[in-house]
Amino acid sequence: SELWQNVPLAPPDSIFKLTAAYKADTFDKKVNLGVGAYRDDNDKPWILPVVRKAEEIILNTPALDHEYLPITGLPEFTIAAAKLILGPDSSAIAEGRVTTVQTISGTGANHLGALFLSRFYQWSGDKKEVYLSDPTWANHPAIFNNVGIASLYYPYYDPKTIGLNFDGFVSSLKSAPSGSVFLIHACAHNPTGVDPTRDQWDAIAKIMLDKGHYGFFDCAYQGFASGDLDNDAWAVRFFVDKGVNMLICQSFAKNAGLYGERVGALHVVSPNKEAAERVKSQLSVLQRSEISNPPSYGARIRDISTMAGRIIDMRKELFKILTEELHTPGNWDHIVNQIGMFSFTGITPEQSKALTEKAHIYLTVNGRISMTGLNRNNIRYFATSLDAAVR
Ligand code: PLP
Image: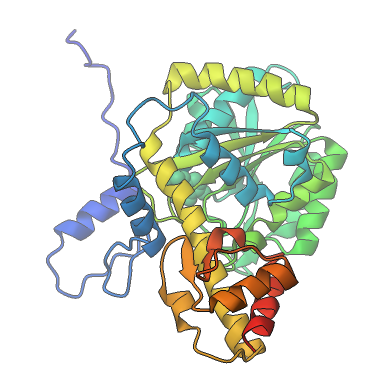
């Protein structure tokens, strides 16, 4: 018979089929509510200002070449990504128990995580199975199927309450054999938009610990549930603190608006540093044979955006403390209007010297401050000292 005659014709992906149908539609009032990509009020793709800024910096930095990244990714990116999901003060990071590998967005993180488990997880018996929420992202069962892991489903959505089927979820956790792998949406569950409450997360973590289940956390929407990155990472951080064995798949497609750049990370949290090193060595081997080296452009954008975003936050915070709380004399609009790493405060050389001598705040006498030196812990001290200096 002819070559490929036995290849069955697969149906097109339903979401991308929907988009194609929308594009082809000529009706003037057409509306697309299918694809999960952010659109602005004019239904146009949205590029975050901070991403634009990062792109400008990249363009103007000749030292940023086109060499291969390390197999596990851009180190500045993987460190920042781990801190973003696990928290800047994460003890797991401090203890060297977290292995982070840069991946091809969230899909790549899911794939690499699934591949790693398929090879190395201590499966009980010869069956490889993962429990997925019913319903879940359509790609989950396909990704696990590709690496020989079968999908089972745990009750999640209750159509009667249009909410969480908590009892069903809990009884699945309890009845699953010890050491089962549960895929859990970290926040902003796709497709239901239904997340457990903190009390419910607490109960889920307890059972997972009791039963020695493994948590395969998928985090594609950090920031989209509450608008706050830390808030949305609460469940992940809670489970890590409780000592649940787990990994986290992280996507920056949605929260950085970097869909096409494929920026993501896989974080495996191990019981100790030695285990984390062994995990890292094997993830490197797997990654090498699959993609060799992750792409640099998106990781650089994301990395620089993190810095730029923090600077913008510090500008806003400083402005707010000076104007709304301390009612510091003078106009401080320039703090928020200026861009980049430095801010010209407009204070006199005498005031600048006074800041250094009296408050131990070091800045050039022309009143220029580097915004990168400000952080949540010292911004109030700086603002009150500045206030005192100009009065
Ligand atoms: N996980 C979930 C639950 C998702 O909804 C998505 C995207 O729709 C992803 C992972 C991965 O997306 P990407 O590969 O674009 O980061």
